[in-house]
Length: 336
Image 1: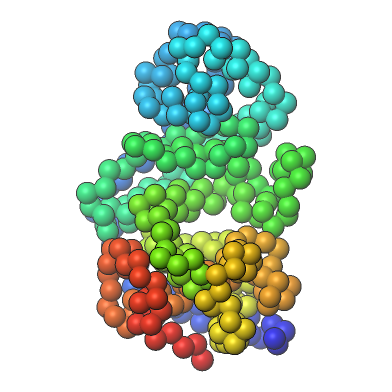
Image 2: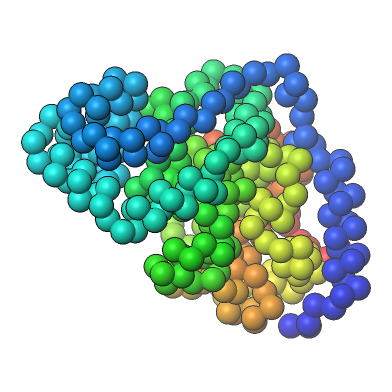
């Protein structure tokens, strides 16, 4: 495959900017109110470390019904606060070195969540534009010892802040998290991950056949959904790509599509092959070290956009369509 050259970056970046200026998903949501407020459960819960008692945790149980039980039983695995063993588990949790360091890092990195709250509000306003009957959940933050990123349950979305401390966080080096994974552990990623979790919950992946085409188109639907929720966000940011990586995708779009077909990857049912094309990694090894990871998902997005354009499909109609072969066939996708 040809090497990406600087002039291609310039031309493609310009083309992307023009495309963004005429984005049909950039709808008017100025009259829609979401009223998202980020509640700092992490800070309130940590105060209990100075007073681990039934009365202290009981106040939180009343303030955060359902979520408090979920957090204790399934996130930090301490069980019910009505059990005597729960309080000893809390003492162990609050004295754990990684938990203490996580709280310290979270307090420093997230002294304010105003920017995240503003972006989430924008995302939920767009969600209400397409799903007006949807109820906006309470948004709460927590620390769980690096166990969870986003937790979704009835009436709540929980955000594990220690999973978004930035690529240069020393704790991630201590945990031996690879560099390519640390790239996505940024606070700017939180609103995207929240909306992605909503998508996965409402539209789970249940293909009739597990193959690469189905997976990449499903992931393409997710990326299209995220673009609808954050239409003014830079495409590279939504994809967690650098500008150069995004330019690579546009520049080699036809080459990658041809390779997927000619090498019989497109309908491969090999689980490891599917993962190599759709999951996070340093790069997509089949296309070389200059090709960004998850590139098949980006191709899936182009198929989805072609399907929407050629068939005049609404966002909700697209989301409800689970026949991925139909989407592929009717997309008439043929990059040039």
